[in-house]
Length: 210
Image 1 (tube, helix red, strand yellow):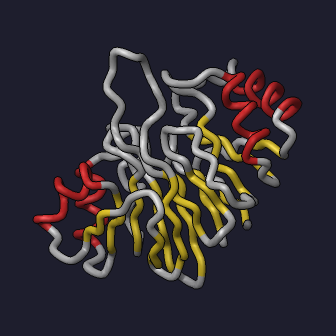
Image 2 (tube, rainbow, N blue to C red):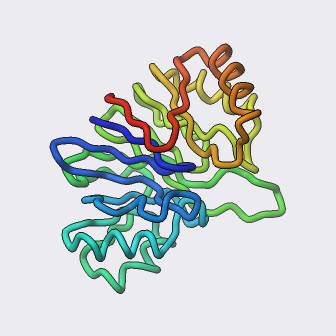
């Protein structure tokens, strides 16, 4: 499985000539979803869900399908009958040849005064876990953890403890659009030294084989 980092929380996976894209939101490239055979969206916040990008991807490939939570599915399902699938915690499905398990129910707390929304994470091929905007522990061995390193809802101590709890072989940074070049080495040092797992941040556009 080949992983390509896109901007912010968007990642692209390729296997056997087929492409799966997770969270092509407003902070990702305008073409982040194009070429996808399957699309997964973790929740409705704009940095993870941008309707225009999803519509462009679904229009460009009539065989493409979208799996997501109800709030997103309700916005796109009527325009793409039979192609938009609603999922929740505990569900399993096959998307473009990738085996996917759904873990998690709620977005992390931003502030007690802000109501929490639904958020789901995706465990792909029993190897890679993308939690969206939550520190969900999937309860199974994780090889590669897509790690949300910087957000209004987290602090670095929580990020480090999350890596320790999941115990992946490696953690790769996502949710990083808000970090400047000055801050990136600080996060790399602290997470790398204290997380107990290999840590790396791919430059958007760069790929690695899992």
